[in-house]
Length: 557
RNA sequence: CGGGGUGUGGCGCAGUCCGGUAGCGCACCUGCUUUGGGAGCAGGGAGUCGGAGGUUCAAAUCCUCUCACCCCGACCA
Image (tube, chains in turn yellow, brown):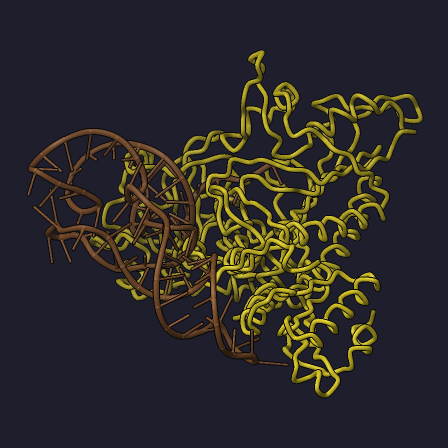
């Protein structure tokens, strides 16, 4: 491709309204433009990158026997009503009516439609297994689109769905997807982890996420260097350092006007780990619930939600109504409210509110002075020990670039996607669903590959394999060598960008660094006098000088 | 949804507090010079200052309402 026939509007300055590095660089280098919050235009360069990612995904999905299909984005409500998600999913779903006043929605995922098709067409165990996938637009009215193309309201997803007769089949397809996903992310040149994750509203039994480490990520992953355990902190198990509990009899202590943990801890001169923090929440299932974590730990709300169901924080009046005392002095002893406690509180005696204004209680032994339901509620963090092997855990910010779910029969039962097995018994199809966000791969690649001058693409994702930079296009010799190389490399099957613009060298160098094509071929009068051109590596900036005739060989073409 | 911020030529910004001719840099167009890291000189085009209403002799500037976007949080199949 000739630069003069390619639309690449590069910017000299960072756009004002951007924070994430990938957002800034993809804007500046002319890959994307923003239409509105969470809606992005992919310019020619950006689309080339996405297409490279799509090609890799297709090749690897095809390699495990998955079949590409295409499902409508516009979908009737009744299928979603049948599975219950029409009501479960809130304002995140774009809803509309057609001209006949029928409820419709824009697909945010395709479990329903894929399962609908399976229900329509699959009759016998002989029809199984099936794996169907598509690369299709999804729409989600995100509460807060952010970070450029990392969280958008409209995006392309590679989503696949497996249909099996039994759990062994599901496991096989799950493993095949793991294999395919590992290859996809490896080919994309990303640093990534596969971690245990929360199935969430997918309602499945098991789930993993693929995570690309980056400070721009929204998720945090706990990683054990000892045994390799990796999990999203939404469910990561960990053993916090031992508590420094006070040896004390069970007794009240006067703590006037000392409400916060810091205040009480400082007032009594006792380490925060010797305390219990109490949080009153109002749940849909159990009414008020008191949740306890150690004073030095943080409660993870998703863990609490798994333990007690949907909840909200109690307000001041509710705290008084249920516990008889204002916030700051609430504790687990002496009331009938359902209590859940973090497992790290199983050992030791703790200080907590006495449910009496200006008093705390020392020497509370969970299980003795009150009876909680035990759950893992604390958030894993750096310095905790791995619950499996005891080695230290560390945490890392990550971008979620894909996920895989064992769905089981949640959708097949609702939509009556059943088959007859060898004995003639009707059974629901066992399903899995598997997603990859190509735009997130693109953003993660930029987050992981850039320097102060611009993007550094992994070879497989770059919009071009090599960029030819003739420094002075009006110099006859330079132009001639550039054209020859352009033709030769193209004929060898490479994606070549020829910067044929009549611009000064500095501009071309700056733009080339911004665009991030991995190899640059610099052709200038200086080199041509010695009979050489320069092959420059974008990442290392190393330059090797070779005769024009040796360029293809040197590039490994 | 809660909190914070920003809207001024294509882009980045100043001007707003304290009302009085709409500015700067880059980009763009023309000409000449220049040509290995975002060139120089000269000339030129381009903005109803997010929108609506109000106060005033006079509003980018003050007041009211509203829209959009960004950031933090909540939320996130």
